[in-house]
Length: 231
Ligand code: C5P
Image (cartoon, rainbow, N blue to C red; front, side, top):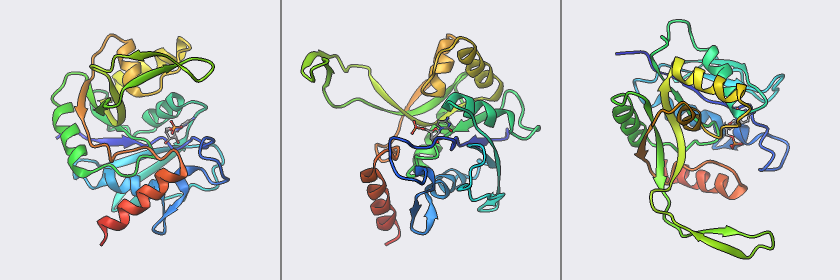
């Protein structure tokens, strides 16, 4: 079985959330959010270890070298998400081969289920390009005007919301992110970088409970769901 590592970008300073402590380090049940995120990834036997890009001089990073018996390597991230992921890809152990698949997963997405991760790996590793977890858009979409009024209703057919993890081959993803950077295009996820190369990653439907922590209400929801799990 080919080696499988994860890159977990955590170099964002979480300005949208507000507060002093970046959201990935906010404590939930006595552990920083990112500990829960890494635990969710490490719950799958195939995941061997993780590289965590953190911001330079990050005093809040707990400096783990392993969790749950699996290695955790930190590296310095960049000014954009893509730059942080690229730094992580470069920091992977040398024996992760160019065509090995790598998982990229947001540090701020701690509620990933083992069922979704298993599904992503089963489907994605059988796809020539790779795959992402995502969910179809279920609400009606409105385009807003400058005044906050509705300009138009947008068709939602075939629209999906992209989640993470996203699963791609180490070298192909590195090339795709480098190309986006060279072209000055800010990609908001890894699949977008792959799409720019003319590649078509697979959409794997995942649970809505794999949400990204963006607001204090999201954090409260995660704390609640974790408490339910441990009852
Ligand atoms: O800001 P947002 O929630 O979209 O960030 C998604 C993930 O990317 C977070 O885990 C964040 O820490 C990470 N990130 C990063 N380097 C940046 C910006 C964001 O690692 N420069």
